[in-house]
Image 1 (cartoon, rainbow, N blue to C red):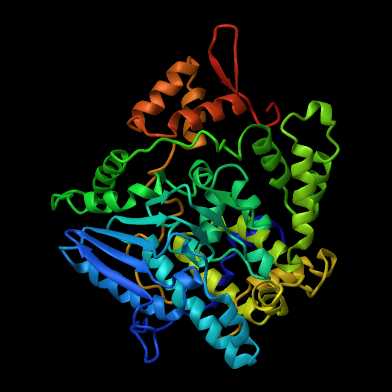
Image 2: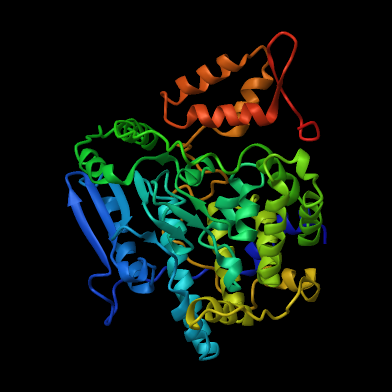
Amino acid sequence: MPLKAKIISPAFSTHVPKMASPEIVKEMPGDDPDDVLFNSHYCVRTIELNRPKKLNSLNASMARKIIPRLLEWQKSDMANILLISGAGPKAFCAGGDVAALAQQNTNGPEGQKQSHAYFGLEYQLDHLIATYPKPYIAYLDGITMGGGVGLSVHAPIRIATERTLFAMPETTIGFFPDVGGSFFLPRLEGKIGTYLALTSERLKGVNAFYAGVATHYIDSSVLPSLTARLGELQFKDYEDLQTRLSTIDATIAEFDTGLPHDEPMLLAGELRRAVDRSFNQSSIEEIIAAISKETKRDPASDPEDIRTWAIKTLQTLSERSPTSLRVALRQMQMGSEWTINETFEREHSLAGKFMQHPDFIEGVSARLIRKPPTTPVWNPPSLEGVSDRDIDEMFKPTPGEQRLQLLNLGRGGGYMQYPYQMGLPRETDIEQFIRQGGKTHPQVLKHFLKQKNQRVGVQEKVEEVLARCCVVDDDGLLMWMDEEEA
């Protein structure tokens, strides 16, 4: 079946029955009473993930606490801003507690069913955040991976710091980029999302901001002061969410600490071109072939050392689960056509398939449980052993499977693009402005600085795009290069 037909196929929506009604989410006996801390500061309601010794990794006990609070605050006139952060200096949230799930899966079908239920709970929480009707702010201060990404990337305001370490490491453990990765990653610029999904590459500090993972960047030392300042904000009853977010945006600007001069933009220039060229392919084999071409560069004409990057990336892909690679690429291709609702419904179905797949137990055990860590033995061990038909089956609903019941289904969950763009200017917006014609470099820069209220990072972003994507004609006017010209 052609890829387009697979993307638009209604099979999932017509063959998967919906659950009659969502179960009430509440704490259970045995849940840790202190793994999430809630507090109020005037109009701000704070959520602090409180498992610092576990790098604040998310588990079912935490999700069962957060969901009811979000639903309660959604109705409260006193709660105007929600803010989520992690305890300690190391991590916002290093992911879900996958080690516990892998051990649970060794108990056979019953354990796998329990693990699948956990993912349902986690995705309900992530979707609730993605459709929340009030300002929701995430401090990505420290390690932000896996489950921590789900708690943050769907927020309209996501603040990175010098301690941010972002990654979607699922292909390293025989899983797939979940928690809404099917939606978030394909909507990053160019092929950055596909690159991050397949390689599990990490973005540190300000580079999470440049890449669009975060919408803002400030130093971690001013976060407590920012939280206090947010508590002073007062919104008028008639102000819509966009107006409120703009007020918060201006407030964050008060704490601008500038950008670090010793951390250049990573995914920029010739490396960004190489990423887009290499990962703009329809199969993993074609991606590998495209990266292999980059290894043949003449070192004398390769000032940015793309050859070394290509060699490293090929090695990285060879270490990932072949099944995970094929599934992740299919996600990136299909996810760009999914609504936010459909994303979590489909990912829930896919998670159930992975709980039955040997690579998840093997990957988690090898990387996280065994001491010292070992190299996973994947099954199948190579890309040749994973057919298109195998991947088709992974994306098909299981007979009798019930669709995940989302908790905020009626609140704008049908969107296909995030409704609020609070970060740096999008490359598509810069392109559109330049293609109007008659624009010089200073004019373009002035336009977007004004549009973004002189925000930190705007100049760096616009200048990188202009250098990579534009040429200047004889009259000094910018011309956008088409892909084959770049």
